[in-house]
Length: 432
Image 1 (cartoon, one colour):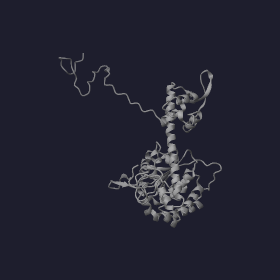
Image 2: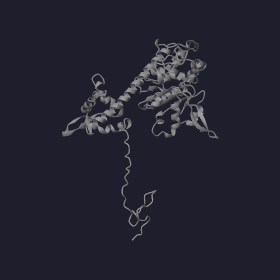
Image 3: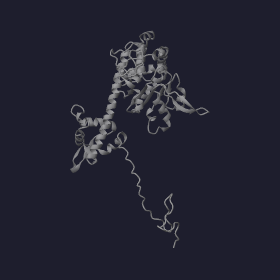
Image 4: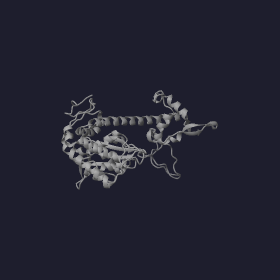
């Protein structure tokens, strides 16, 4: 594993070495003690947890550190995104953005904001972008929001400006894009965002899970007071934070994304360095599992399509016949899936996300059996594993003879002279 130097908190490294001690480098113990940073983060964590039910304690820790990291943005090399996603409405995504709006540094909601405004607002001390309904920005019909999409993709790393023609003289102008951003939406966001984000997978609250209603008259003053204290603690430490290279339990882009959060944890001291690294490990591993599951489900759709094709594309396949076809493929992972191979329960569970489920189907001689109808898969096949587009047929070089219109001589080929009979003259012939 190559590095730019020893990873000991004195030089920046190209890769990340896991923290063997589990606690990291407590660069900021003195600063944390002076500003009581650990206690302040504890208060912030409790406040966020009162208004929103996060999917795990690690997610609550991550959101707390992300809020605090927004107050040292000018000191950061990377601006991590916070991807707040959920499968349906009513999972608390917008409520979390409400809480973030009252606690992060210089919040800027971008639901109805012109991209030109955002470009001009971002500067040396950038705002924290909060984007609700982010799935509409990246959808197939969001062409008018192309500039905002580009800004959100580029702004994860410092020194990635967007060039635009600006001013009365129409000069090329570089607009900074570097800014932390929280994006809330239904379903996963594009890989370019998810790969640069701390992903919070929201869920609906269970009956026993209680929260405090978010009301402006008492919620906003409480959260704003925490924001003021965070700024008072962290703003003087921006110079210190810019020089820190914390030991990270992950590598590559995950380390770039989580580093600002770990820096804040190390500045705070107490239990936060350990908690931050534990949350980093747990949540990045969870996303690896999510990616693997997504890839595996796409493979399943492709293999099911092949099973239908090999069976002659029937209207439906019995569950047992479909499983047999999948298990017979020696190159597929289905024979080793789970403890005893893919079964009917596994199959139904993996296809549920695509709104595909087995049902009773009548086969020959009136017999019924649980089966999967082919028409259930058509939409999923088109979306997740479309067939490669077939090349259009090459144009034939042979010219088909055309019958001239009655009473008119045939037109000569373009770019050539009329050719007469051998040994004869050229030119138009006298009509009889």
